[in-house]
Length: 269
Image (cartoon, rainbow, N blue to C red; front, side, top):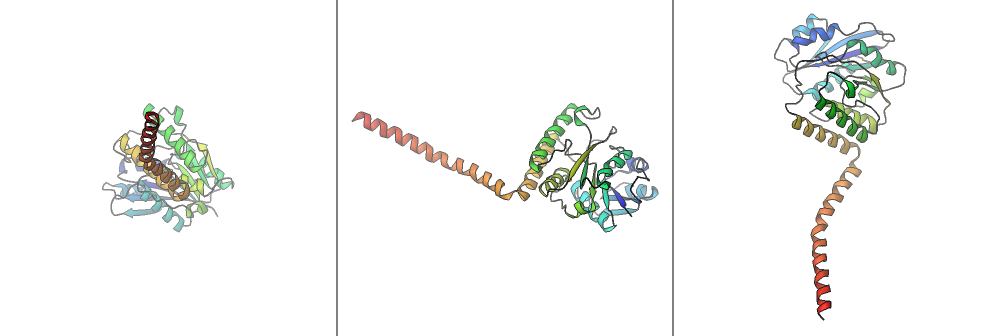
């Protein structure tokens, strides 16, 4: 039997969680059993009550807010403990359409992929602002380069993971799991696929970051840390080369002026 566990990280999502749960399909071809898992990341509202009222099978509690990356990892660990063959991660705010979970898990069921990323068609997504489109495109391009993958929407959080892949993933960042996970998967040569998914408009502002510069800085640090973990020789060789170039500049300056003095002395003689 194939068990699918759909995990929903939550931080004060009482207003949207019921709608998100109602949108999740309960019958998926090729899946025998579907369970819902909510990760309560230190919520202070009625998130847990709403989850219980709407038939969630598992709830993981964080005593305080630990962030999206920690909630994602807790979800993976709990889903594996619950016997999941496939794990789907979706947002509690209803950004993604539950029906698209069917398309998301299909490549895994068919044995064609270890991980499947939902492609939100960032370039033409009407729910994204022009600035968000630019940032998403730039972020995806950098992640594709660092991970050695060809996923168009590399920072999408709507993704399906096989049991085997989930057991090989360990999120190391405290910010966002999306880039860290994909760089790990690419460097471990997992089979990664992408399928088009639809999105809904969400009015609530992102809780992942408070400012665009802060988001960019955190994302860059996450990417570099993940890349350095799996490419230490190349990373530290590049850093060493840059430091060596800076260090040799004073020597080159000295040689330049010394040679100039030598030429002047020769000419004066």
